[in-house]
Image (cartoon, rainbow, N blue to C red):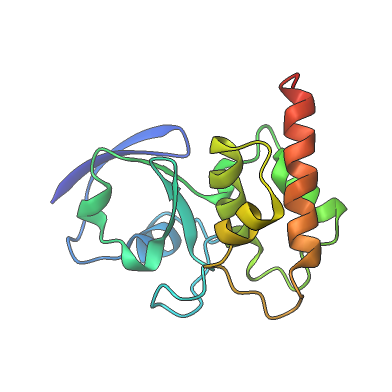
Length: 158
């Protein structure tokens, strides 16, 4: 089956296996290994990517579902070797711990901050509620997202 989609701002058109998960396609076919497989059941958020502006568990998406869509992975955030504002905030706030959940957390945070650059703590917790971290109590993650929001507002002149 042939599908066309945008991946990390690059337009692609390719033949794909209809029953392949987006997660496997990204990792095994395209070598984009930042997206992690945790549970394979949509429960942990390690495989979170953004599809058409929404944070989605890529382990639950079959390739035909992305036809015509815009997909962003963690690899699509950095520009010219520079970390994205959200990635920088996670590093600066020490919200990376072991790092396994970090790409999914960052993608969930990005989807939130793209639509709301001044989220409350409750809105942040709601945005990352599908992302499990076994290393922290989430304090540093929430703080990183608040810092990223503040830095984005400064950058955008708000």
